Image (tube, rainbow, N blue to C red; front, side, top):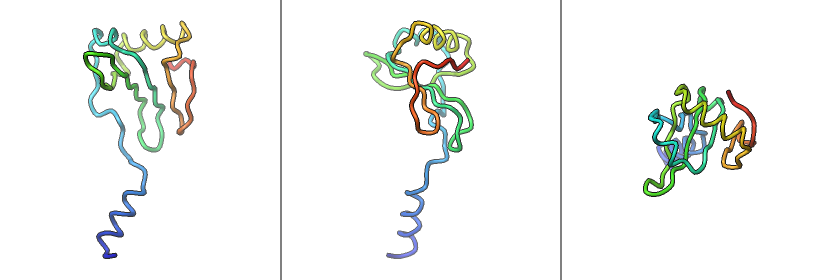
Length: 102
């Protein structure tokens, strides 16, 4: 193996040092499309709280929600109060459910 191959191999083994959410959605109309929510606590990989929502049809993808938007905080806390199982908390690679974040 040459030096370039060894360097690329080593870099591929390192954990990503980037946040998952680069752009966030802050418009409240999106809340009607949310099917699942992942809440990722700050860690060594990313120093900020991230909220990722899975959307139902006709937009079956994931979007990042603005953690500072008042509707997002109300949305998460209402789901927590209802005891919804669609909330997933990720802290240091462990998954927890039904814990208040705000």
